[in-house]
Length: 253
Image 1: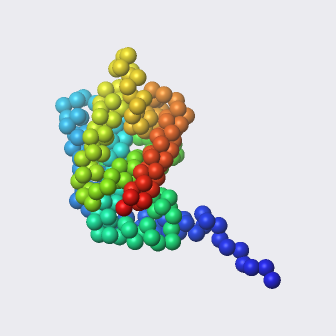
Image 2: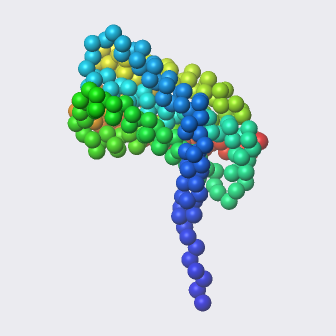
Image 3: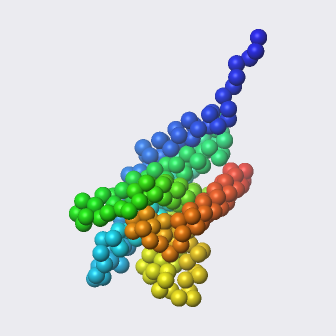
């Protein structure tokens, strides 16, 4: 008799990763740290930039969407992972029959979903109150999905810091996020930077903002294919560094 076929590793690991995603959504989405850095901080930051400037909603809202997705998607992991270290639940997950990569993918998916949901808020407000229109809605949905995953992977990469205090991770993360924000072309358009525009290429938010600008307004500084490749390259970098650091932290724990 032939033995029954065992399910493939992917089919075994995906439900486990999804269970971690649901756990994070249930526990961490409404945490004060997640709400502050994922929604309130980018909102007030953008308001301080927009007040007093005679700009149309078509010019303002894409930037607000980019900032919101940048901060919200990258804020769940830095809150969840250190908190679970303190509660000793992270160690239990590591010793469970699930691969470290699946654990991280579950955490990343939780941040990506949170970022996508938070991004819908300024879009809905813009469409209802200001008559905001979107030139390429399907392209916008695809862009939000790709960008959310990439920035969530960025947050997970920083959460590898050996600490049990989410504030420690957030402090270092903001030390990186804020410079990336100000060189991304959101506050100063790339075509107005002159020779300094080359600096924008080091920020993943540059490509994210450009993708959103194209999806909403039909125009952008780069081609959509270049933006997608830029986000994909940064996502792979964040994943590789994140998995490496988490694995190193697990071995030294």
